[in-house]
Image (cartoon, rainbow, N blue to C red; front, side, top):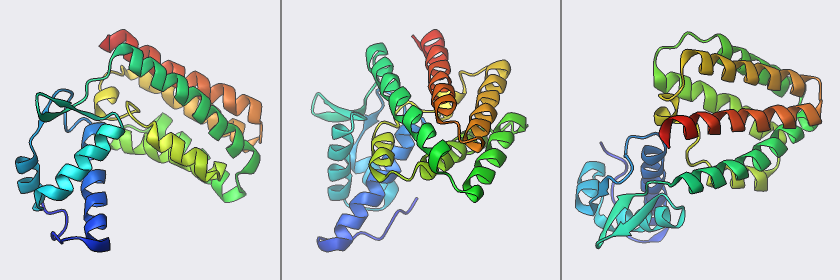
Length: 220
């Protein structure tokens, strides 16, 4: 798979690093690259049709994110401990609760309509494709984050987006649990429509805690 034509130095080189970094980050978060999987620079460079330099820099950035680690002089995908996941979800409750509350206060009429539509689609979607369910979920939450109109909060949520509803996490949900999650989406959308910040915050927090319970029960 070609990512970009390789370049050397300058702004184009930095752009290439960003593209490679974003691609690897996405593959880790969506489960394409599994925990403890070795990340061999030469193999990644060959697959992405780039030199090893942007691969190396990207892996170093991913290490700062806590997504990869160095093990015996090689890189591997980091496997998060139970404590790490709990801590990440504690942060998520604070960040996403605030995002929901801000969205309830600040969302425009058009944004509210989009959130309502996305909330209904996640509740009633019959999508069998797991990737599609993940994409629908991400779209719904991104609409709320965008409606909060707080760039710093958005950046913090993005940095903490490890172990969100990716394909691996989605595989843990039963049909009933997916339906309950969809109901929470619709309730959250209704709270935002009514500009009820307190209720929106409570529902968003309960939604994150619901996800954490499923992960803790089925993975640890």
